[in-house]
Length: 400
Ligand SMILES: [Zn+2]
Image (cartoon, rainbow, N blue to C red):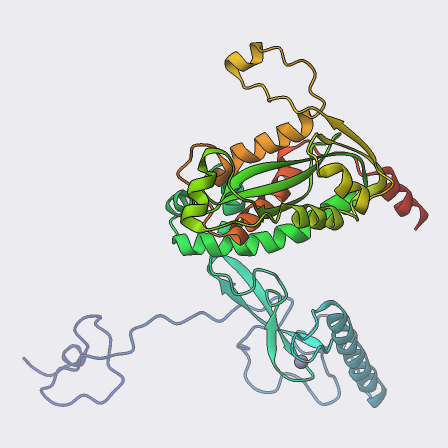
């Protein structure tokens, strides 16, 4: 084949190679990609100016980006530049002051001058989190650093586990339901309980102090029926909210008493000090002249008189609460302790380990305490109709 123009062309695109051709060698590379067109200029200068060379003369200056013929040319002098520099400085200063007032405090040194420092993606709940850098110590922190769920990997489960643990679901079943480990559920219960105690306190302060309350105990057990526990509960007569509760060990009674002593030794009765502790702990939520209703337990009257001398006490003979179905046909009549009995029945039904004839048991008393703390907040904030905030709280907010 004779050498001509077409033989030195690259085969695939039929374009001429810009490089010198070697005799007898077919070159296989060429610049064959597409290039961006130059942007046709409109109101502002295109990224690559079509005209090469200086775009302005020394006397007629334009603002950066301003095309010739758009707007009046300015004649800069030193005063204008001083003004521009001053405005820019004050604008940045405003931003910095505003930022330091709004941004969270540094968790390490407590300084307020944190500035924004990028964001990160949190995979757990697909949130974009703002990060900050402390201008004092230079360490970084984020808007998640100050939250109670800081460094939790499964924070989406918190609300779900709170609902399930208060809705008659065993911890093993919760783990299966949400695809997590049983240990995760157990840890979450401890975390949720700490949160629930704070929230319950806030809720009770918002709707309290209560002026009509009821007081009773329910019996459950730890590990075995031979090791019974007593749970004392105070509830509001009007709203049926749970105001406080406490747990203590009691000795087994009845037919299992002898076997209990044989197997586990003598079990002390700690329910008296526990009841006193609960009565003390609800002092902030119950009015000191409240009316308290309870059954004819021989110890109640004295204990309450000791802690709240101003309370008016009423004792009623306890009636066995009527069950659904045939129980409704029983003639029990008006039950003055209906509200506390109903609250205890709700606890038995909604907390899996308190249900009668269940496989679920309390292994450790502090875990029952945690589960009941979670239930108490769920009961007060979700299960019962929300009461009106108390008149005292309303008048407080009016005065301030
Ligand atoms: Zn710092």
